[in-house]
Image 1 (spheres, rainbow, N blue to C red):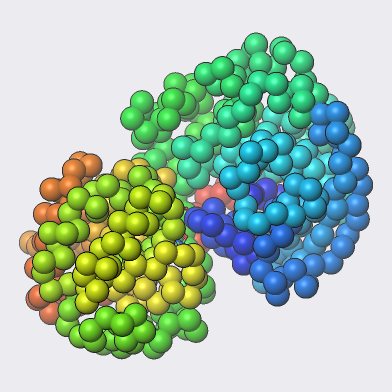
Image 2 (image 1 turned 120 degrees about the vertical axis):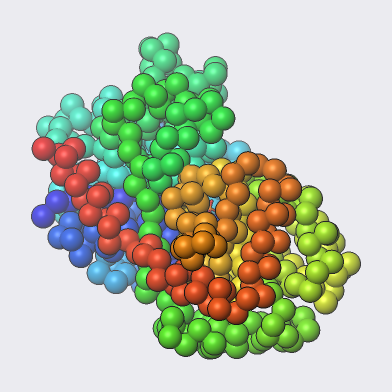
Length: 477
Ligand code: ADP
């Protein structure tokens, strides 16, 4: 059985801040169904969910070098739904609140990446492929290629590097090469890690991994262009032969309106009318006027420019003149948080702004809303729209990245489609398609057929897990 170690900086159900956490939970589970022994390794953060912290089993500990520092490295283990998770412990690096955003993130993940490489020799699991994800694990392929591969124990290990978001590149002062990795200047001069005068973990991952993947076909093409390439488009073009887009799925058990215990009333494609109960109950809970017929617009998102917040900010005042309700759940940039709070205070009967990270509330909004807004500037894959589709909530999106690959715009002549979309990053285009969607909402038959086709869209992991398996086989043969 193929043995894959999935290295990530977050994984549900332990801890998650976004899409990567969903992927690190679901993909290994689906791979295991395909006879791949996929295990996961993440840092043992202080804020791991309490119920899992209690379940962790200590495996062993050893010391590792982070540049000149000699650091403790503990390994814990836990099985969830048949998948083995390893958690890397070091109080100094991970015994803090939250996940990212510390001044020494570079050092924390330099430690983590080295710890993953060292752990491979210490556990009873002969890894064949390390699947790394985003900048935090970008140095694993580099460590493997420059150092560990020379040791016979590691010499057959291959690396796959997935880009979930090219925006976050993990770029640090070149001094870290000596300070944290013990390498000389040559590793900077040869250009493989050097990025506009700094050292980028992301660039290291892209350059040194055997194969590079990203999370949708459209994003795989987009990042080879200057607009989406975040200054790495040239590098990605140079690795074009080894770069592929594999669409993320969602875990159909975690997101299932029929079984979901977090929502008010379960429903499926045959009992769509029960979806309305979710709307009226949420309206009551959020102190909005209870009205089954008022269209509810939902947003569950990081509140950052990537997610198209500027477009929303510029149209919402106008849209809110209509009979609609808007429920926003998100955290992010202060200015956007304040904007939504301000909208709520100006339109208390129409807007509810919930500025926090709250999984239960997220499920309730997906189930209750009629329309899900996701007009992203760029979107590697996007899970929000996939979850919305599953709950029969019609996505209104911009045609970029995974949004373009998963939302089929409604065609009034053929009746095909599961959402609404617009092409250019332009507030008027968003407003036009949103108004179009709101008009169709008034037509019960059209809307119901849209909801049905949304709920029947297939975005499970099955297909994509097969493609990952093929990729691992290709890389190990
Ligand atoms: P990202 O770029 O943030 O990874 P995705 O759409 O790929 O965007 O995934 C976001 C995931 O995080 C989804 O599962 C979404 O429901 C969830 N999420 C985002 N913001 C919140 C929040 N404030 N509370 C709860 N869940 C959230």
